[in-house]
Length: 280
Image (tube, rainbow, N blue to C red; front, side, top):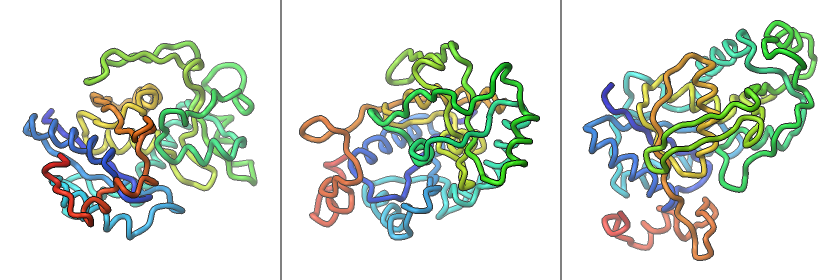
């Protein structure tokens, strides 16, 4: 397939140099392969995504020197390109996972649910799920799980049941061979929240497959998320892309940049008259 890469910012704050560095690598790899770069807005977090951040994102990306060939502003064959408008695709994937018995209803840990909406970062991984709501016995429990959801007056979260003890391996384009063991390095993870919003892990798998992304370029803090997502690709019978995880940009004491580092946001640098060519 022709190369298809993507930029996938979340408009929960101003983009900073860390985003720019990873996105620039994605653009370089797409250009080197004479491919297409897709802009996708990951705006599922209704409480934190704001229109002013979306507007700033477009301006700052263009100022820095980014050019994409598909996106919410210019359209394309796989529109819509904002996750908030792609709910039907996520629901179809959830129904397939329920039907095949890969997920089960879960009523615990509000903190896990809150964390599930955003991409995890190093040091922010959720603890191994203790299995409080996990059905006993064989993983093929689709009928019972769906019936549990229908009978419950309280809406539930849906967790993906990982194959305990299985090693998930992949070759990363930058970090080399990677291996993670299900049930040891990561546990059952949320794919759908009780407030009827798909979690990060499910949404990006569905979108990258639907948009025919051939390589995902992102930060190395998402290496373990790749193992989770490979399990979802397999369960949904979708071909996975290649992966390329970039080193993180850190501050003076080695802490990764976050949106709270306002002085290193692209907007602040732009206001101060920084030269985007020198930044690149």
